[in-house]
Structures are given as C-alpha cells and as structure tokens.
Image (spheres, rainbow, N blue to C red):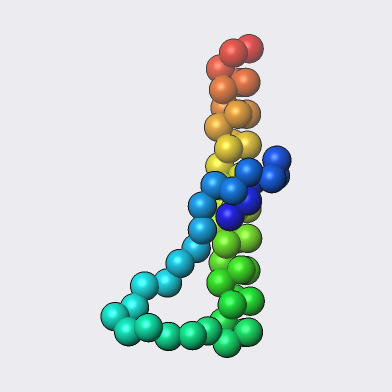
Length: 57
C-alpha cells in the first residue's frame, strides 16, 4: 500500500497452510483490496484532521 506521497506503508497478503500461486485475476483482486484499504486509511486521516481543526477553532 502506497501513501499519496509515494511512501510504501504496508502490503496486503494472504496466508495459507500450503504454498500456491495466484492467477492474474487473483493478483488484480489483491491490488484492488490494497487500493480500497488505502482509501479507507486516507478517509480516516481526513476525518481526524477535520475533527482536530474543529476543536482548534
């Protein structure tokens, strides 16, 4: 997962008891999950920043 400033802040992984490979579609879905997780983190950060700004008024 990459922040808007380009800094890598994490990754999405899948754990299993057996080694496996992923199809192109499965890799695409994992990338989509990572993008969704970043959107949620960014929205959370925006909410926190707005709440802090409101308290500071």
